[in-house]
Image (cartoon, rainbow, N blue to C red; front, side, top):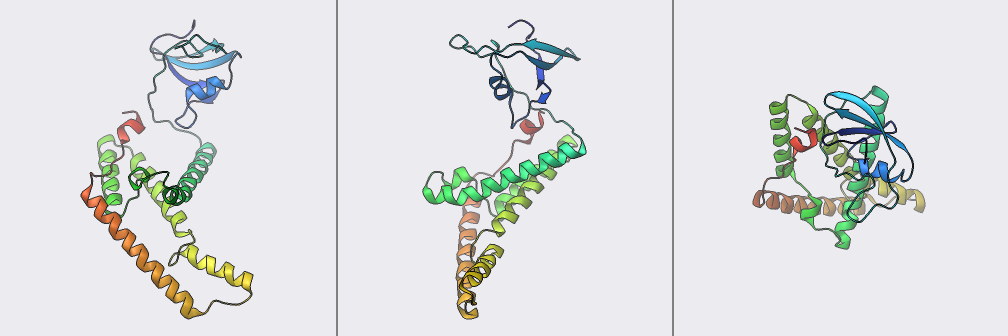
Length: 225
């Protein structure tokens, strides 16, 4: 399509920034048949290009009539957008953590696909983040992994499982509904059994982490290196 050249880097559509969560094709497909403005970096210069994505392109062609490939780049944003993005990402992490036990129980995903990690796996990922930070000079890997681990641990601790804070909150809820307290002996026994099961699960995960390939994150790809 006229106006777009080979090597153009598209950063925004009608002022909306292209990101990993909101890719270019999603922004374009939401505006089929409508003229839109692409913010493009071409040969070191910023330009705006007006295009109209086709509603019914020929087979094998996209709405813009060009082949699109993605290159990740680090970007900065203001304080308020950064806070909003942090809240959105934290909500996404929370949703993933909450959905994993259900998906595992239903057999829709395997433990390998869920990438459940114990202390060994977490240590491997932390080591990779530290190495990436040293190699690139950016604190992004350590900060991003710290945020993910903090959110995952916080949500996991709130799950209604014995021996976790979520389990204790569940007992408080039950007591409020029943109008009387569960006997301390019974509650203690349930928490003890739950704690033993959690230790057993942690042992199994640790054995799996030791016997499988180290868990790593492709920080270079995420940072566009």
